[in-house]
Length: 292
Figure (tube, one colour):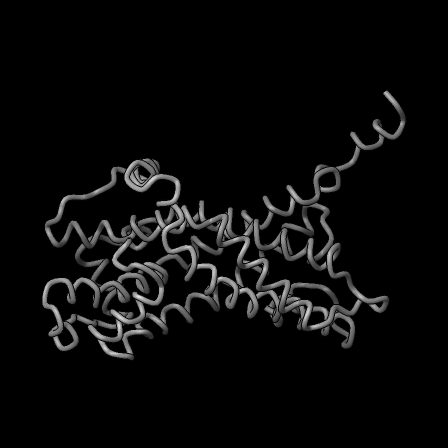
């Protein structure tokens, strides 16, 4: 065996397989963030689905009759009617989803930043490149993760079906995957992928672009070092298409129905991003990987 091969075998895994290592590390950080904030995601999903269920039962009278209880009352209702642990109903596919989604988006963004677009000689990364990179990373990550995203939402709604006296559709995560695949084929696993990647592109334009730009601005232009303080400062098939979903929601429930679940969604994304970035940077440091 040649000397270069011997030297390569002695390198840490993070240096031998940098992209695979970053994928796994981002998946670990996302798992921590998901477990910490998942109840808010479940609450958001229940709020958004209430109007759809009322519309199916009551037709156009759903706007007045839909039981919108608000974020806190919805969460308390889940605990009282279904049990405390039901706040984590569907967390397994959510973790699967974020391992794929976060791994895909983080690896894609760093590859675009370091290899495709490249930084300037002064280590400055232009904002326009960061915006494009963030949006592309979101598209790639969400497209890869769409099957797990679909299963996550379906599993979250099983508790609601049980309360309505309807039979449960799935025995578990793997059964949900198998059933969706059997009924809709491979294409069925990517149902709703178009609006999902549209949203992911915008979310990551905000998340990745903001964090990367603010963090490196602070490191390069202030006395702050690349540490935890800097990281914290930076920080179902009811519709034919996303357009059809928009039209039906407005017609059946009013324009403001488009913003159902906004508060819990915002409240969840803020702590989720904070936990993710702090954890991700820390485990990169512990694993011998350079800071993001």
